Amino acid sequence: MDHDKIKAAVAQIIVAIGEDPKREGLVDTPNRVAEMYTELFSGLTKDPKEELSVGFELGHREMVIVKDIPFYSMCEHHLLPFFGVVHIGYIPNVSGRIVGISKLARVVEAYARRPQVQERMTSEIAETISDGLKASGVAVVIQAEHLCMMMRGINKPGSKVITSAVRGDFRKRAASRAEFLSLIQNKS
Ligand code: ZN
Image 1: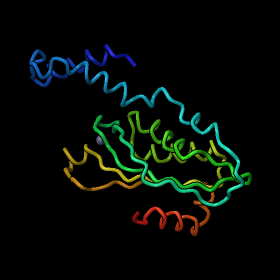
Image 2: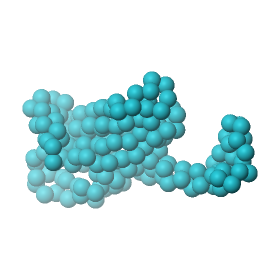
Image 3: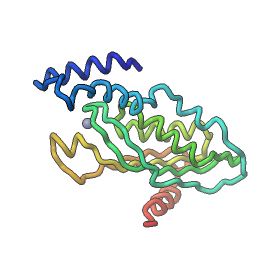
């Protein structure tokens, strides 16, 4: 990440919109934005698959669901935030390979902290868990609000975008999909 380049670019934007880069409130803004982008885009230097390299075989072959994993990402079309929750379900393979719950949250984090579109993020998470765990099935649902929809353009505050991706058993078996969907909808 090139901190100085971000700083220079933000300084240019401030001038380009007709603001005064020397104004007290703005004088440190290029530096602050550069520091913030380093954090918000830190997923670019991570390999999400690595998060799943340490799993364990428990012989558990039932569905595992982690719901309401919060995330914050940046829409790559407008560089404005979109944010919400990710629900992940998977069915372990024949040897029952599972992974610590925090690892799934780290996969989400690695994909969220980069310029993104919600649809791609959904399938990337599903693909990574499917590959990384050699799972029999994976289902991912993301519910998010996009500031670029809320603040501009179609201007629809409160509307949510829901995307889903299913692999393996979840694609083949309607009963598994239905079980996943009913479990993630449970209030509590
Ligand atoms: Zn956008």
